[in-house]
Structure formats: C-alpha cells, structure tokens
Length: 133
Image 1: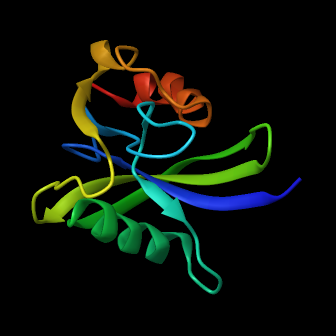
Image 2 (image 1 turned 120 degrees about the vertical axis):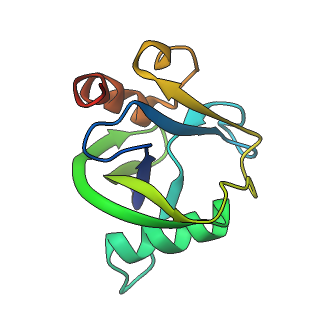
C-alpha cells in the first residue's frame, strides 16, 4: 500500500493553552465536505515544518508560527496509508482566507464533535480535548 506523508496544523488562539482551534471542510475530492486540520503533502527534500508553512500559505494565505508536534498519526485508508505529523500553530501574519476549503470554523472544546471529521483527523480529537482549556 502506498504511503502518503502529510502535515497538519492545529491552528489555535494560544499554543500554550488553546481555547479555540481552526478546522476546515474539504472543498474537493472523495471526502468533500468532511472536516480536517489544514495542511498537505510533504514534498521530497522538505522538512515537515517547511511543508506546513508552505501549505498554510497556499491554502489559507497566512503566515504561521509552528509550535510543538502533538502527534504523528498513522492511518490506513482503503487505497493508501496516511502518515501525518500534527503540529500546534498560531497565526503570525495575515487573515485565514479559504483558497481550497469550502468552509471553516473556530471550535471550542465543547464543539469538537459538532463537525464530521475525516477518519485520520478524528483520532486527534481526544488528544485535543486534553490540550484545550
């Protein structure tokens, strides 16, 4: 099975004690309309952090500061294996402008299960519940 290496930004209001996190709904493909943390594929020769900075600039027209890695998710979809490095992040500069997603929401701890997460992203939610104030 093919492995796809990706990165995800858990963009929050405060990396030390997050109260709200930013989630987006996919605007295309097989999982259109399901929710995820923004990010994307790591290109050859690129560090996960560099890939995340590039992907957030491309998808959200925003500059971010990257915090600590909070998880590495390994998930088998029917046609590929996903390996996803997940980092806390904050907006450094710019507005969160949707260029690929069809919708976005800032979610509090009590709202984490209000959206239909992609299966791989869903595995982060229990961890985020412990991280969020």
